[in-house]
Image 1 (tube, protein in one colour):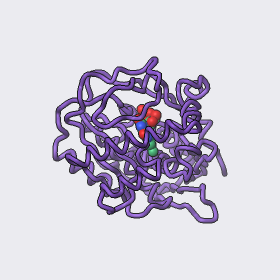
Image 2: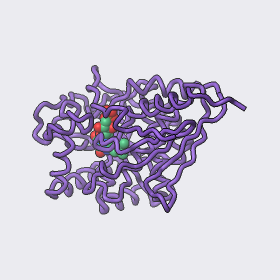
Image 3: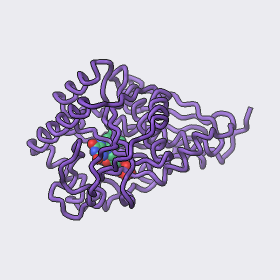
Image 4: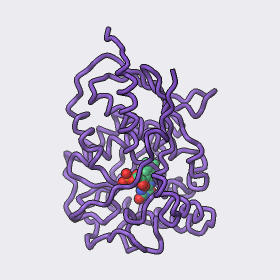
Length: 329
Ligand SMILES: Cc1cc2nc3c(=O)[nH]c(=O)nc-3n(C[C@H](O)[C@H](O)[C@H](O)COP(=O)(O)O)c2cc1C
């Protein structure tokens, strides 16, 4: 039996700090941690939900899953096995998971690599080069998703064209909705409040609009102050869809952990990536995407992975630890 000491609370707070680096929809960081002496609870922060783009809180839950995976990696590297109970409990739907410190354990090589990738990872929306993603890396990414209870479908030929058409259609439908435009503005550089408050998508991380093999979301439609998408044509880019068997909150949490594992795995392999979730935010395009997958599961989001041109996009802001952690005895 390991002895549990006051250091545990500190270890858990460090894990919550590391988890702030996790990707999240619109960089909303829609979670809270309640840190106890030997465990911590992950809660959804509904005040940060995108009520227009994500009315069911599906992508909020996926984002919380990504934070949970980041925290698990941090605990593993700190030498702790973590016993994770994923919820939600129907009586307490916003309590998503409980992480309890287990016995001391040496970190796996994979956890060390994922941990090293956390501070390097950025959502990179630029066009990727023609260099294809090696087959063994694709196989590793598929295995990483499976290990987290989700699946990764690799799109080929005409399926990529389908994704391009559906993503463009989703963007058209969303931009035609004033409520969506208002929500986007509230979380992007157009709203001085969002990035200055440690959340939201700064224009320097968005790319200016340009023809793309599969469109990426326009976070700064005016194009002002944005990143140059570059001259590459995305010819070697791998297009994938992360999907789950069920379409329930626990499945969304698994998808988020898989997304984190995939993004960190891709970063560790020298690859860049960016999620494409708008195609799953409109019921119509999500349903069509399900057909592209031949109905084998519920698409949670698409993910593009590839070799980026030189340079790295700037880091997006994050909230302070005190804003996401509550201590409880
Ligand atoms: C569930 C989810 C959905 C996302 N959807 C998109 C998207 O549609 N387009 C995009 O460019 N980035 C998307 N992102 C990436 C976020 O915008 C990004 O993680 C956030 O702005 C923080 O930036 P960072 O990943 O560089 O730290 C998504 C991330 C998550 C977790």
